[in-house]
Image (cartoon, rainbow, N blue to C red; front, side):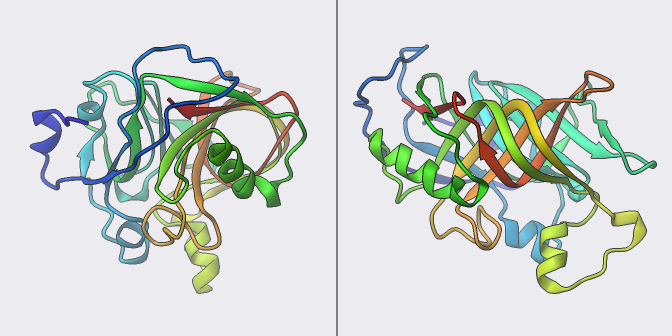
Length: 259
């Protein structure tokens, strides 16, 4: 994949991970024609941004969506919120002074990510979830489904899901990562308390990266996925996003894999 000059001119260059996929998929339908070239675009790592607290801005989000069909998960600079990009639509969610979720605007185009992983995917294939998938089986189910579809699961790849999700645990960072704090047994100060939520059932869309053996780079410990949920707030109707700690899939949910 060719990366635009404007993207390469940022202060810190991305890590570009090339992955190859088998584009021959059986019993699937694509809603675009061009194939994904197998490239993962990455800025920063989990260890740098969270473990080493090197959470300065590394890339302006607006630069990434100058080319079409970009999908990504990211952490806002300063670990000030979660970022999800769905087909160039940038959704940023932070934690307000009342401890509740609040959308963060990028109208001025000045928002930056400190850690980001994504891909330009103009074409996807769709695969229905035939049976409920428990949270404990989520990573393995993604890997098995991708492998069956011809994706090389030894290399990072992007995926998306849309439909009904169950037994969801998610968080939105607010200056520090709650997963890192739990692992390191760190008590976060009040001003860095994240938003954390448990949702028994919710409709929405997931954007995620599957990356085997990528702890500290692309994923948290004990997982091979880094995924965010996009969903509407029941009270305000606003579109929000959060980092998924665990999630289950309801029958009929659709998995999308890059073509």
